[in-house]
Image (cartoon, rainbow, N blue to C red; front, side, top):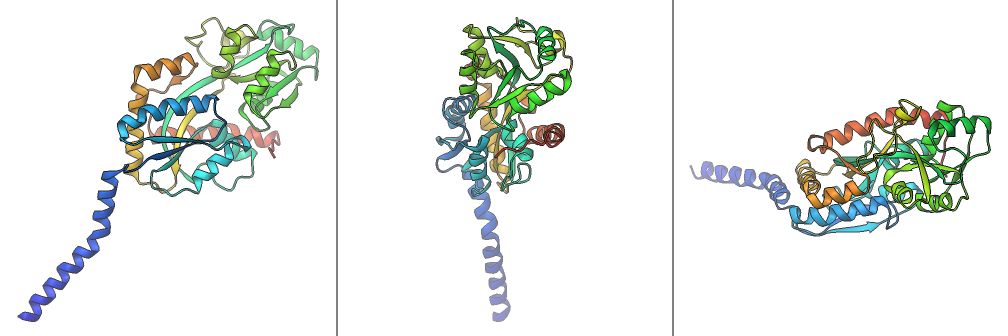
Length: 331
């Protein structure tokens, strides 16, 4: 009898010990976060991605109860910062704000030490900004049809500034060439800001870049906008025609923002981060700031890990064949 009692006590103790890791894991997940969180921004301070990251971090803190510290880790079209997150502990305390360039285009244009699709857990879509086709003020054409006609008559004479080899502006320029039959001289820069400065100074002829970066220059009268690469006009710039209206139907492109954590981050932690993003994007002030930047916030039902995953896969299917066919290889 005494042996049976001892055996039962031992089995209960063993069962309790075996359950400890699971109980500990649940308690840990319920407590998350218990310390500050790091958001990696893979581009220099002052750019669009940095501005959106700061806006989000301030408002996500209210939902999570912990500060979100931003760290700029720039270089190689965002791949250095993104690579750091790929190697980070999957505990919810490090994640990255990325975009089409970092999580789609780089996968085909760069020799990466990580997989843009399989080494991350999607958290949420944030917002999107369509690209604009813009030109220096002294350019002979004042609309898209005139631009295409001039380029066809003057092959290899116009220069198109890009944010670097393999960047969104570079790939969009390749597509523009293919559709129009134009031949352009591509001029790579280390970012969109210096390229826009040279465009405003008349050092290059044209660019294809996101509305967030180009609209302030257009509004200031430093450059001229010829078309927006979207199905509908921007509410903050209703005078700029779409590519459909301007003569190149179906030529659409936009740069979208999202958040990713390292692969293996627990689902419940991802859910908490996702809820904090949705709360931040529901804030009226945040929505107005993003709208003024030319950013369109994704609807609530698309602010999900599943929606970000689906969009990333669809964009890879769209852009990778174009990059590989053009043999675009960034150093």
